[in-house]
Image (cartoon, rainbow, N blue to C red; front, side, top):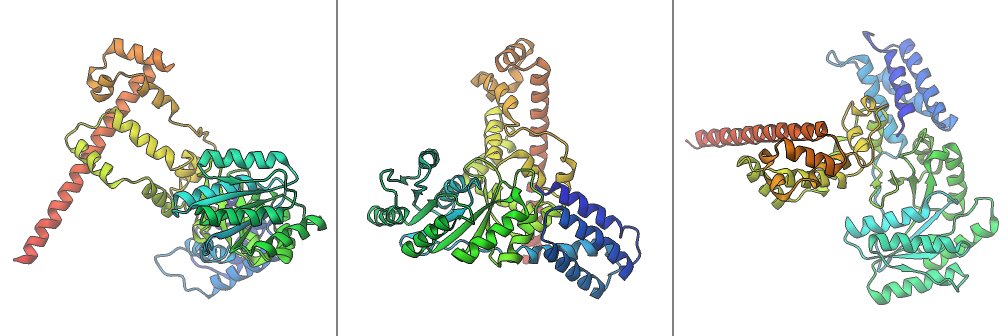
Length: 446
């Protein structure tokens, strides 16, 4: 995401490379490029102008420390101002109430129905809630069917009534159903509508007035750039929504919506959608997004995703196996599955500082491990447990069974052996460090 914008920012900061200090002249040159980068990303002209003015004011007012190069300071100031531009603080969703009611609004084709499912899955798995999805798109029968398919895929009930053509009464009946059956969150998926369609806009206003939602979210396709911001402004004037959801951030997005929308409608971005899968949803953190735009990675989000998949008891067992040198292909397969649960591999690698740019032109499949898994699944239980018994004839059989070459099998076994050695070394180092800390503590006792 934001690859073009990232490239243009890189070029802008090159102006300051090799400069001994920040001056009004080199700042002006840099910010000229920054403004151009923002406009190319479809950022509102007024927003781009105000942003660069703030960066200039900050840059010329800062003391350049000896240990900090002017270019580095400029990146830091830009990161701070980008964070402020996108909202500054992370805003949580309001799920107070019994049940809490969330009203989804947005344009046709914005990904609203899919995101409703993602939000339900997020609240169920991350917040421990029992959500109910409500199909209030009375104009497209396929939309009701789509929501049922989404609900079935995540194990969430969907309330619908195809005979009823009144979204107000459908949503009210759904809330009554939720109260009677122990659902503590109701997510109302409404029909996509055009901002210029007076009848449709009046209809969603009536729904909001009738159900009094604790949260109204506006879903917008981030690939539509400045048009998305203008539409958000129109919707906000009618609905006074609480937050914005940006979908399709994994696509060829220029970033204009993410950078402009907060300053134009003064409503926070609360979530982003980064793929088609039901777990491809992230809480929006302005500071982390600023880091990613500037090519600084997002280690915090990477660690959080890893922690979500972390099982303390399983980790202890794994450590013992590594120490005893009994880590086998079954364990290796388990670790691959843990990584896959964290999300798209290229997206994960892009969170590591410097990796996003390095992987720019590298094609990494969504299922990057499928060939490795095929080879392991072609092994017998005995071979997975003890890879040293895999001789030449066994390697040929494994290759044939997995549809890969013998060279691929050899390469995987070699990589597996190298991984085992590295894990053993790391575990031994941790043990040595722990012993050193203990001895140091004992000296303190004496």
